[in-house]
Amino acid sequence: MDKLNRKAVIAGNWKMNKTATEAKVLISELIPAVKDATCDVVICTPYTTLATAVEMTKGTNIKVGAENVHYEKSGAFTGEISADMLLDLGVEYVVIGHSERRQYFGETDQTVNKRTVAALNAGLKVILCVGESLQQREEGVTEELVRMQTKIALRGVTAEQMANVIIAYEPVWAIGTGKTATSEQAQEVCAQIRKVVGELYGEAVAKSTTIQYGGSMNAKNAEELVAKPDVDGGLIGGASLKAADFAVIVAAASNG
Ligand code: 13P
Image (cartoon, rainbow, N blue to C red):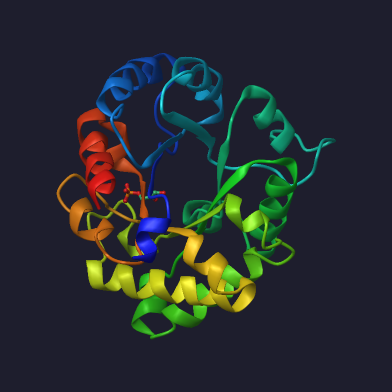
């Protein structure tokens, strides 16, 4: 029942794929393919593609997100992009705390928190990623780890701002590996995340927060995953680069 009160969101995370020229082809295929969605549809693209994506999706149901944002407003931070720069382009969403950034680019719970607060204060919507590694799952600390990541990331975020936060549960072992979490595993951890949100902000916020699953979600397994009571859509990597596959996932979340 609660699920009906929340908007399912299917977001593509393109990662470091597609030049702006290549993106034009994919976006022109995506627009008709997802036009009947009743869930929200977001594409998070590399910085170099954002202007093209915003321009091409004007007047459509596709929203555009970036894959990261810096926490300072401006200044001597060579190579970085601020929230205001994204907003000025017409970007609405930003992915923060993706495990690839944590793994390869020194992202910590503290920097995830700084980016989250800065993005929300500027007016962006945040897709906040949390999730355990295989070792952490095998050691039985998934719940503690995901609780900690969620709590630290949300430090200083107000209950009102939670309306602009989506949390994506992305088990690191399932990302790009073809090894999807079972729908039961996805449900279990998404429910734990919702519980933490409830502890921090109360039941009403917990019930209205969109919590996605991400990690090898594809056209075949999406329907079962998004049917789970606490799984409100998905953050899609590889399958978001194929319009036909992404459209099947969007359709599954539109029904789910
Ligand atoms: P894959 O769907 O390619 O496993 O990637 C998931 C992901 O990391 C989305 O952010």
